[in-house]
Length: 203
Length: 172
Image (cartoon, rainbow over all chains, first blue to last red; front, side, top):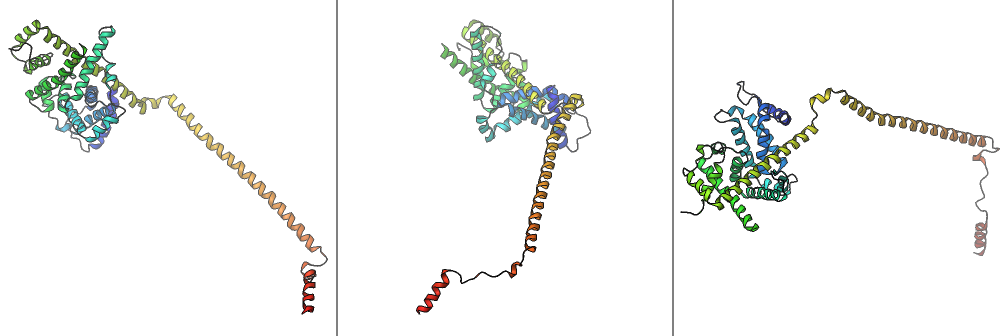
């Protein structure tokens, strides 16, 4: 199982760094199970946020290392997935704010291109025309997301890719629900503007 | 009154797709629903946006799943699983590699020994030849009638040089 490989790599490092783990059992003590359950989801969020395979893999491991290191601070006032997603969001924020990210984004060989994604567009209809339209629609959203600010993009992905509820997004981001909605309105305005411009071009 | 839905109304419909009452959807959903039923433009745009967002989500999930599997495969190729170490085939391959590594070392040692033997033989033959030459030279010197230190010296005033000097003296 994929998570087992990561868990053995990641947690061995994490356990070495943690000198004196507390004896009290928490929900995060069974880290192998947590990694197995949430690793793919965390990786997906990192991959679509950063759009680089290697960086996404590294940040996914960092997420679980941080979770293991800070497991004693988890009070159980939110779900584990919310807590992990909050760590992942902070890592994405830290990463995208550095100048190194802006440089490596341009030159990285492992950067995700829109053509990589378009081959994964589901084809519910077999006709070539409908496939092309579907691929174009997906590309529009993909390009629109790249134009969003870091916060708008994260909230947009949490809502429309991870399908989280607004209250959960508010808990992850630490923002009020009204602010989350405002960010979503603005993100959707960008998507909608590009969408309408494409429709006008096609007419 | 607007002819079409506002941006916020359209967004609220999109956000309410899988949601709960706490999302904060406007209470005039009936009005919005009625408008969507009547207005082809708004309903078409809403459908198009829903489709695009759905395609984006499906493609992203599918792509990340594939990449996740690839990254797992890469990690697996680097670190062999623990059960591999107990398989006889693994140990047999390790033994073959070990023997293959020892073979060139052994071959090198044999070549070195052969070279040193040849060098020693050549040195011995050269020593024998030089000894024989030395002995024959000694025999020649011993068997001579007059020892070389007692042989007569060559005449230093021999030849044209001496005649010239004599004639010069007489002239003066």
